[in-house]
Length: 221
Image (cartoon, rainbow, N blue to C red; front, side, top):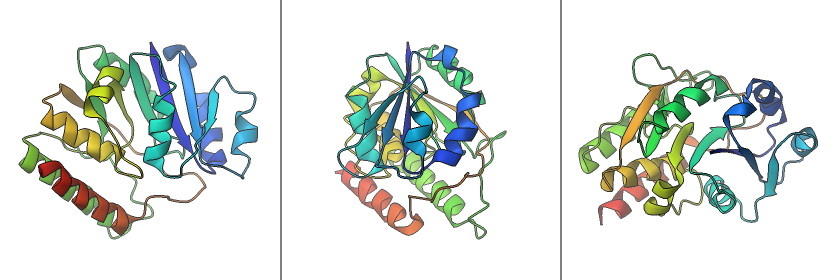
C-alpha cells in the first residue's frame, strides 16, 4: 500500500493543476502537511479525499517528519504541490519500488530528464545540484545523477533505518547520503520538472547550499 505526502504553504494554484492529474487509485492515502496557508489552499482541500495536518514547527523537513508519524503503509511518495512534479511519474515510481528497491529518486539530469530553469537564468541551481551530487558520489561511493530532487519514493523501513532528522530543505539530500552510507538499493527515473505555478520559492539558493555543505561535513564524521 502507498501513501503520498504533499507539503503545502500557499500552493493553491499548484494544487488546482495537480489534483485532477493524481491517479488516486494508485495510493491508499494522501497526506497533506500544511504550513499555515492563507491563500485558499485549505479551502481547496476541504472536500478532497486526503488527510490534512497543520505542522507544528516551521520548515519543510520538520513537516515531512511530522507527516511520517501518520504513515501506516509500506511505501511513501514525496511530491511537491507547486507544479514541479508531474503525477504521470507516480506509476513508474511505485513499480520500481516493487522491484526490491529501497529508494527510487526522480532525476532531472539523467538522459530523458530536464529541469525547470525559468527562474534561474544563470543556471546557478543547476550548477549547485551537479556539484553536490558529485560530492556525494565521490565521498560516499554512490552513483547518483540527482541527489536533491524532491519527487521520490521509498520504503517505510528504509526511512526508519536512515533516521532522517532534517529540519528545512535538506531532507532529500540527507536521504541520498544516508542511503549511500547504508548501501541501500536505490534507482533513478528520469523526469521532466514542470514550471512552478504560483506561490513563492521557499528554498533560497545560497542558504540551502550552505546547509548542504554543513550536512556533508557532519555525515563524514
